[in-house]
Image (tube, rainbow, N blue to C red; front, side, top):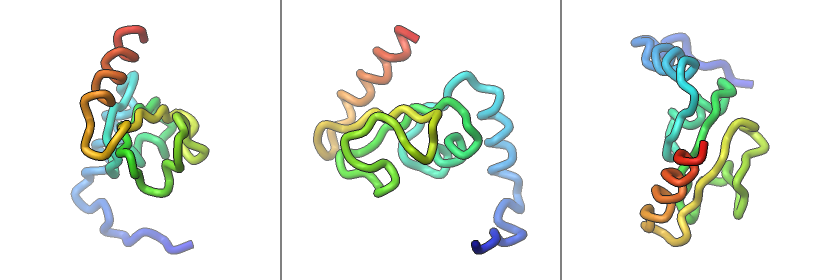
Length: 95
């Protein structure tokens, strides 16, 4: 295992972001470092994934074996984010 460089969070951006996430009921994100941080922290995460996502999100799943608190919302086709946003909004309204 390669350790992270000592200055990888020199400005404290991830530390501050992590603190905010831990205070939230839910993190909604696209596939960014924010989503990975939320997942690694065990925060409830709703991830908006592209139709052809990064390998970690696998295919045709709404969950993640790496981040058990994650729920995935996927694009039906490349570039079509409207159904994803609508699905997230609907899920939020019934939460």
